[in-house]
Image (cartoon, rainbow, N blue to C red; front, side, top):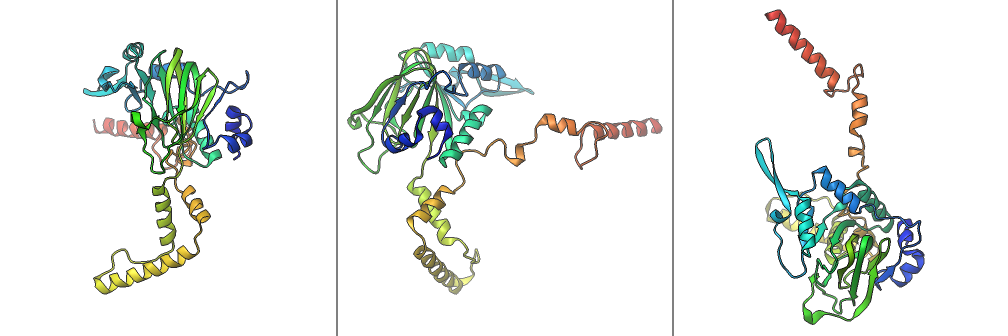
Length: 341
């Protein structure tokens, strides 16, 4: 595994890959003064509140004691063009709930915070796996989620305060379940430690864990690295077995349907005979990622500032209606109106 991003967090990537990756949880203290800080922190969170567009479902308040916190308890409605819209984040309400022991959870930060999106895109390319970003803010003594398992490898980047982590053992059954664990499924602890600002925690996929605020207002960015499931492998196998098969989508009549069955089986047997485990794994890895495309995709690379410069008066027409052409159209209409008068 080659990953400059991981090297900033775990040091020797080769050693991490051989010892911890998908095998063992690990806590990495801050790698010196030059260690990169998380791209999203409490200052960026305040900027998101100040921007006024943060709203559900991107934010949520949670508690490990199963007390449901309804959205109206931490959001406020707004009236736009005479219509009331709900779900806009209310910082005063959020702070009040944090002081009461709740945890703030921000979902898919990579979708609405550009620096985090850049980090996620970079890590997705380096690891060849989809990555998503979540942000948690927890008061001292607070716990947002009960002991649970995630369907992802998780890297925790501590941004502020201190948080105590409890990481249990891996699942003992192959068909393990996601989410909160019943009391009778609690396995022995594999890691127990306090994460300080600048530190990084790694939790392998499926390892049960929980976290409790240990000091100050604890904030961390969680990067979840998704991996393949059997459903992904089945989908990849279906694509491989039907690739290059030219059959009519709707065969007419029993004979045509029977012929289609025979052609499909013959094609699938030939493809399957030539398909090995590595081929299927490679095909599954090549599937379109769950994470959104990078913001730098060709369709979205042009900025509004660049578009404005291209639409300066006198710029050549490109078939689009820019400010200059709108102005000319308005002058023509105004002239015609005056002539009629």
